[in-house]
Length: 77
Image 1 (cartoon, one colour):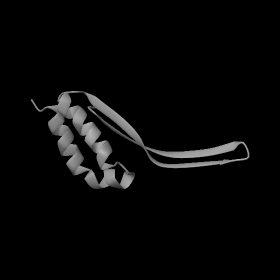
Image 2 (cartoon, one colour):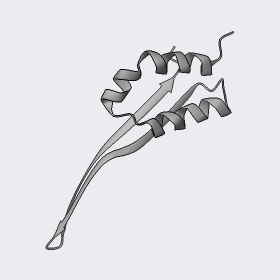
Image 3 (cartoon, one colour):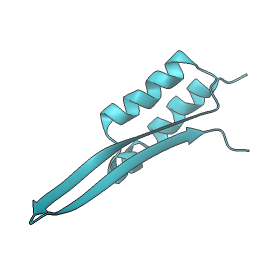
Image 4 (cartoon, one colour):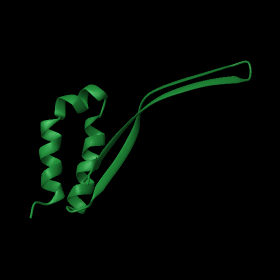
């Protein structure tokens, strides 16, 4: 029986360039990898981080924009 951790490693290597293009950082990838290391047959893992952030305050108003990158690895049916 193949463990989900082994399949995860295969998928990450296969799609490494695409993940980088989307903005998945090495730290975010390592968080997901750590979850699969702790529980190798977990069904799914989701993590997210703020990749870019803009904040401007003036005259009692605030403008805030965030770019959030999320990675979801799960077994589909």
